[in-house]
Amino acid sequence: MSRDLRRGAAGSESAPPWSPASVTATPDAVAAAELDALRQRMRETIVHGLHGLCFSPYAPGQAPGMQVPEQAIAQRLRLIAPYTRWVRSFACTEGHDATPRLARQAGLKTLVGAWLGTDRDANRRELDALIAVGRAGLADIVAVGNEVLLRGDLTEDELLACIAEVRHALPGVTLGYVDAYYLFEQHPRVARACDVVLANCYPFWEGCPRAQAVDYMRDMYRRACVAAEGRPVVIAETGWPDRGAAVGAAVPSACDAMRYFLDAQAWARSDGVAMFHFAAFDEAWKIDAEGDVGGCWGLWDENGNAKYV
Image (cartoon, rainbow, N blue to C red; front, side, top):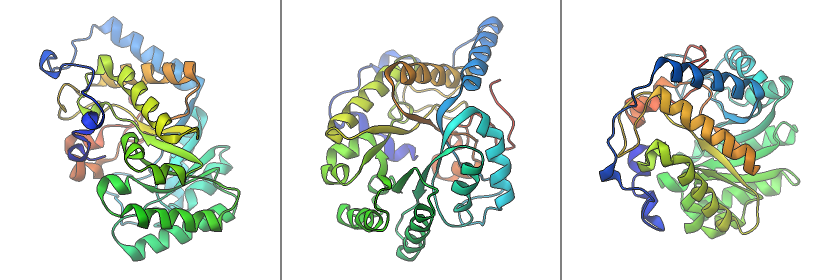
């Protein structure tokens, strides 16, 4: 998720429900007892089990464009499988086509994405691979692209053509598209082309202070539901980084990452909202696109060590 792309989203319908000028963007000073209590709650929540985790298997030194070894995918899936019911993958080439099969072997449900961008040949390979995964019965939901409209990589018509192709090739497979929640308001044809609306909801990238972030995410979800016109809505990504630069009144810290996770999980469970936490693992390669905050979103670090428990 690009920080620059995220700015201004809150104003697409109304002013954000906080006053950034009134918030001091500094991490909380946390007593040892409170920190211990947060960690205990994290253990209990994670062991209880999450609906879903966003999964990317890149180890230190790896990045998109490199082939991911199947063994590395299997190793990382073994780490998270006891704690989640679903995994969301982002691509179907460069070895990622193994993720749905390995996830199924680990007893997990799969939200399988095709990564679409500006390279038409790469898009062709992704769509073909996604269709192959779906025909093999390894996808519970297929996602035809991730934030393509946000990045401006495809036009709405080009995206709709990709969605129509996959729908024709995979009758009976639940189909969706992933983008920032407000883009489904701006592109109702895309929402109507989906069986399920897959909305990314990031109060952090819109500069919302952590204390108000879950209330703000609840409104993001409400707006996506209105745009979905009765279709199911899944929060395909949400999270809070533990390190890096602040965005407005949104300040990364380990304690606020835990607080956001706990509050978001509690809300999703109480309201019956399907939600994928971003992310399972830290990904250092994202720093190039998002700054220092980009590599700090995981529940596990890039070496596979649990960060909060």
